[in-house]
Length: 235
Image (cartoon, rainbow, N blue to C red):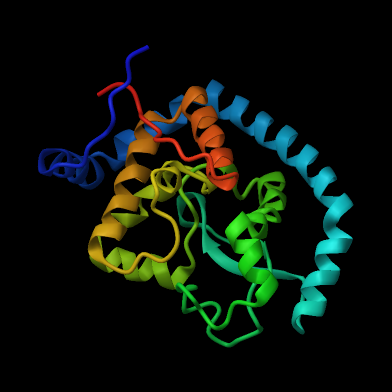
């Protein structure tokens, strides 16, 4: 099946702006109308997260020991994030930083001195995100969806794009379209904020089982350093 890469241009940006400013209610009903897809997605979320959590349990004592030996503090880090329909939830991760007072306000930066030695490896391999499988089991997250931001980032991004909370129309995910498109890590300027928002909006419009599988497939490729470009078919 032929596929067309999505290119960001001015016309498309204006179309997305119109979509988010004037059709939120329509899109909300559209998302709700995909009941079969959402039910199937939830079933897959539960099955996959349960299997992976069982596997993770086997390695948890080893990871916990290394984290504790690497630096003082808890094994897990939890942080309030914005979820479905703007509801706040606790998001879980393996702790990758030294305990510090700015963890909830200041996102990690490149060569951040707060990141521990073992934390660098956890971040590079994305293993630090695995405890979010518990969030998936609890129903506050999905395997695929827009990434949940810390509350300070949500406020900051909303100043740049006033309709930014539009992305909370669906559950946040461990991975998402913006991430496989390369928009990961700190968002420090307008372009990076806009591009993440753009692909989150595209995902909400096009969310379906095939796209979710593609995103999961390309996420695995990113983790194991098999870079490929994800394209999204259709207009």
